[in-house]
Length: 591
Image 1 (cartoon, helix red, strand yellow):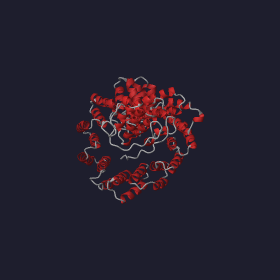
Image 2 (cartoon, helix red, strand yellow):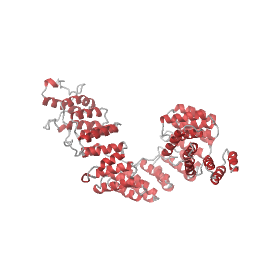
Image 3 (cartoon, one colour):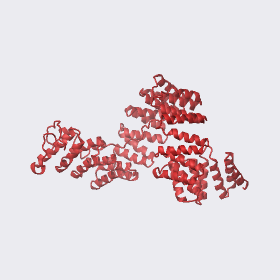
Image 4 (cartoon, one colour):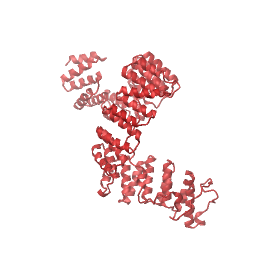
């Protein structure tokens, strides 16, 4: 059973808009809108009032401001409508007010107040609001930065890049714009351009933030070693720069420098930065260093929350420290296991560690049938029975799971695999077709159906089914491998076959069957020497390799007149008792 563990302390966002609003030239202070006036004069706070349907405060008659009010009165009137919308937290009223705000050229601070508030609410009107703001104040850095951030949040980072490029073109000395553009370039994965931009910042302005961004660009280009020095410099100048500390710890982990990573995480713990996540990273590092007792000490610093301790127990189990995991789980169970989460883990461990199926099934009996974990318990029961070779009991269990937990598709997947393993292919095909209709977006059923069709010899329909997967999941490496290998085997569209297989290897590297497919496609396309390199790599990856991989090795070696290698490859294939043993014996006798 694969446990679910928390995703902790991945690379944090580079910055939020708050980083840019503190101290940038377009900001005019931190006064709230209640104390701000459109002309930097004292204006009384607007009392809370009800509104009319068009966003005008109750009691205010809509006026033709162009003809009935002086310019100063127009501005005051626009500000009052804006203030009332903000006071009542009414997005629609603010949306209606923005036209008058633009007409009267309300000061920057009002636009910023409104924009930041809309941003905090993930409002749908944030972009048109800020477009109006920039129409009035196109050169204000704070508004440009806020607009770029809003474009990122609304799925348009490339537009944010264009916006900041244009601004920087007009204001080439803007430090804030350079930083923001570098951030955006990192987000759209234009790391080299970001690095070149940051290099132009003079030494006297190379703040910890600049060094942090420089490190992020290098990390994006897989140059963690170079990034570490910039992160070290950033935290040296600013010891409480937690984002830089997090990146530094993560970079150390990636380079397997676990002792240094632990030191940084312990610094973060002292800074009280996300203590639960940091403790989990420290537990993980201790287990990777085979120091379970130190991991237990970190646990004692954490919360007594059940989910935290369950996550830690999963980490102990995954690192094969079963005694500590069992002890922790039993402590939690003694407090009451209403959901059955603990008993599911104990059952998994009883089978995984001791292969005690009866004990595991007995522990699963303790999971309350009405609990939220009942479906997971039934699924584990099915998987354990199947793994233990009790296929009849496993089929009964998976069919019960289908009846009781109709939303869990894995029960159908297990039934298909059990039937296929028992060579009940027609029945498995029927289940696969029905499952495909029930879950048309679940590509696993498409793969199973295609594999079953291939097993029956219906290669054409198998190919069509799996080829279709690539229309919606172009990076499904199973489908890429199947389609690529089939094209190679049929000696057609070999250029495409190689492209698909190389992509599959990129997505799931060092899988022996994928590397074998690449070797076979190279061989079919007349690149025998390159094929030999790949097939030699393939046989070193599997434990042991599939007999077909050794067969391909023999065929490639014979073509290159490497008879000793071919003889050894065919013999290795025969040792694995393949279905085509007679054919292999014939080829071996001809050497």
